[in-house]
Image (tube, rainbow, N blue to C red; front, side, top):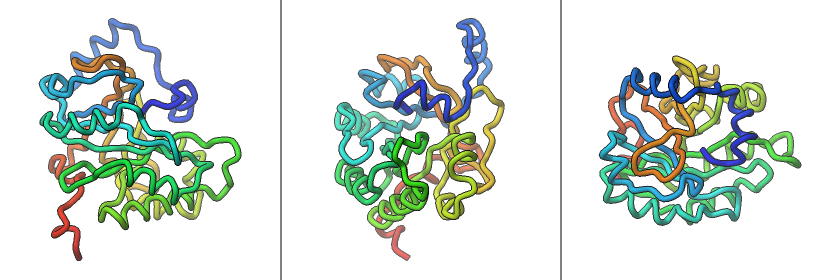
Length: 243
């Protein structure tokens, strides 16, 4: 994700400093699974057909932040992804000081989600100044509101260190963990799964990567091999969503 990179990298966990040679070696030996990217306007221009040709199968793009910050490239990315061959998803950067209902409404009004799109995602990685102590209850409210409208519960993006410090002991933790987990942790063979979840569904295993078709840096994520493809993470059709 792209927000206050220096601050968020400290919150999500210390990332190793990697030399160019070591990075190239890691890339060469890294097994490929079902891989994807996530971008915001900080990634610059994106040629999504080239990203797909490079072997990536899905992409999350930043849509909104808080109650009034729209990513300036979201509409362009969302439209271009529709014909790219990649599965597309949108994420909201959650601002802990802002009203959860206004945030949910802003996100839902911005993104034209449809059946077959990836589950909406909420990025939770920073606790801002002036946040009230019970903010995890607000986060749960955001999740519930989005689920009520789309018939699909948002996936939660966070890091193991952030979860442990800010959310693990809160009474809302178990209900938040009814969402699928997109776990961010770099420089490890496998991410540390918070105790509230049995496993992760997406793992953001690398940041600041170079990908053909992306002007600037991009983050890389992988689908859990235990899932039977990306269909496990998509918004269902209305017929499927009905009880």
